[in-house]
Length: 214
Image (tube, rainbow, N blue to C red; front, side, top):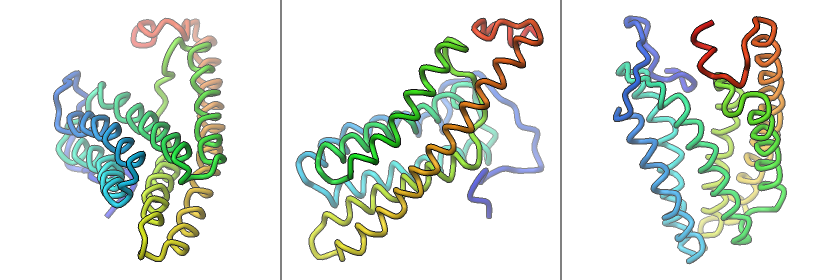
C-alpha cells in the first residue's frame, strides 16, 4: 500500500472538478476548526487531550488526500486548500508550542523563515500561488513534523517515559525541519523556473488568467 499518493487508482480517469463541497474539502475545513481547540488545550496544559487532537489533525492530512484519489473527488479548491491548511495549521501549532515552552525556538524559526521567504517570492513573481505540485520531499517533511509534534506533547504527560518521548520527538522534528528547509529551497527554485518559462512564452506570470489561455 502506498503512503505517498495513497488511494491512487489505475482503473479510472481522474477529473478535476470545480466543486467546493466534496468530502475531502469538508475534512480539510474540519482540520482548520480543530486548530483553535488545540491552542486552547495547550495553554490550559491539557497535554494528553492536545496530543489526541493533534494526532487527529495529522491523520486527516492523509485521509483527505486518500479519499480524493480513491473516490475521484479531486477539485481545484482542494488543490490549493489542502496545502494551505497544512501550512497554516503547522505554523499555528509550532508557534503555540514554542510560546507554551514545550518546543525549542529553532523549531518555529526553521518552519516560519522559509515560508516567509517563499510567500514574499510568490507575491512578487506571481501575485499569489505559483500552483506548483507538492513534491514527495514536501510530503515526507510534513509527515515528520506532524509525527514529531504530537510526540513532543506526549512527553509532557507524567508517567509516559517523558525523556524517551522527548528525545524521539526532537530527532523527528530536527529531520522534519531539515527537510522543510530543503523542500523550501526546491520550491523556491521551482518558482523561479516557472516564472522564467512563462516569460519566455510571452505570458505575464502575474496574470493568472493568461496561463489557461496559453
